[in-house]
Image (cartoon, rainbow, N blue to C red; front, side, top):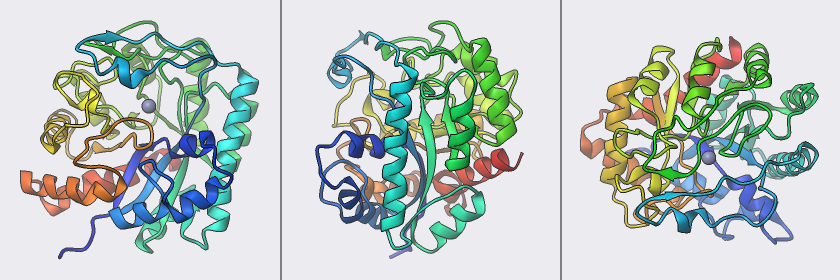
Length: 354
Ligand SMILES: [Zn+2]
């Protein structure tokens, strides 16, 4: 029985799940497990999940559309939610960051909020869980960047300027299939300033969800490796959320990273959110992403706790099955170590030190 393969996961929505849960003890739910979802500490340890970007996502105001239901149709174009107000977004952000810091404090050293690559490596090597604080959609950041500077000092090390709804920094793609990712405008002037500030502080700038124009705006401006934490290959699944071959090549040229998203609508060639999605569809995306971006620029970005993932995978305990599928498909041990952990660690280390 080979040792379990450590996994660095580029995207989960576990903090959102805990934040929205009606539980009186979300910290205990995470540390002890048994409260549903895809990730908690016992399942992370069992599945080899040793590090990950823990996203803060701001719930949209108003009644949300049932995106999973819409995406189970043969074709779709889900309406974009309304914009979020900054003050409300900052309140949600502090609440979710506080959950993560309380988990760390109560974990007896089993969970560490990491700010350097060395901390991640040491935490994972000890068999514990390294958490990186990430924002998905920068609605909490004000135009004077006060919140950015304070959140950086609290531990923020990765940021996606937009989720799919528009904000003062830029425009995201809708949940639309089939569709090109070239669906609208890119970064605003404030969005360009956000790129510069993230580069200067050492915060990864995540291009998942942004329009293709926003991607190229960033590519022309950023000094850091290009990152798309949870996006797949458009050539395999022509969804607006996936990356074209040109985008994948640009990520490879900067020695950046694209993380495989397990959400079935982004994996299946028919674009549908369905649990009966075999590992073979994940492998097809990995193969194409490696072909276009290179073996050093592909990683994992599960979307656990934020999307419907293949039933065969289940939750974080299923990660060894994905690793085994990669091995059976012909990836070497060295390649698997890069895809599952090493590439993310290298990219973040270079981004944070640069
Ligand atoms: Zn997302």
